[in-house]
Length: 310
Image 1 (tube, helix red, strand yellow):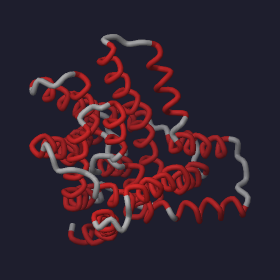
Image 2 (cartoon, rainbow, N blue to C red):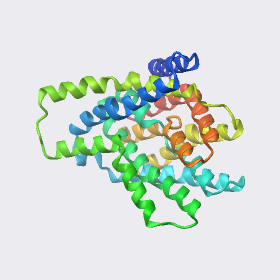
Image 3 (cartoon, one colour):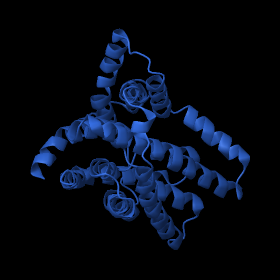
């Protein structure tokens, strides 16, 4: 485990570097926002396109994998929503808390880190997890918040969800890459080198951006943030492991990657969602901060364990 901890340490050191730059205001909030935009729309999209252009849809789609991830995540989602209702929270707040419990930082942290730690073969299962997070749970929380606010489900919600997916560069870069692969188009050398150079900026840029954005997060609502961090860092990988290893027996290697993805801290884009809808942004902010800090240890433990599965 100590060896894995040393391998993950540089990733978290980059996050810490970004945090220090943001905390000292050497990197302003505006600078962080533009760096995040660069990574999100350009560097990470180039990385995902390059990876997916070398895959096929049959490499990506694994129905047992999908069933295992959706069952494990859905179970934790239900637990956290139920706890929210018991605390007297409404549908909107309970659903945003549940989102914190199952959506990890797969795009900015998982893609670069797991590809390096677990090998390039990890890319396909990581992208499948990322796609389910964005398409299934990203759509679900918008439907629940909007429906809870209006008191009923409207067809206009589906239009909002659909447009949101079309505007997401991570989804579109994966779709474009798979389409490229499906058409068996050759990758010209200049294009290959272009996306390789641009994609190489994704890892340091994303990790630094995570840290810089954490510098603006508050540590309020500590009890609830602690519960949501526990749900994300412990309950989520635990139920994913049970689902992938026993309920839907997934092959050892993709199961290990799935569990590693589930161990990642709360995703930063949930804060953007919470802020946009005005639903518990301080609670989400604290959950991101706490879960990222504790994940320095928990992610190392879980990755060390899952590497023994294959």
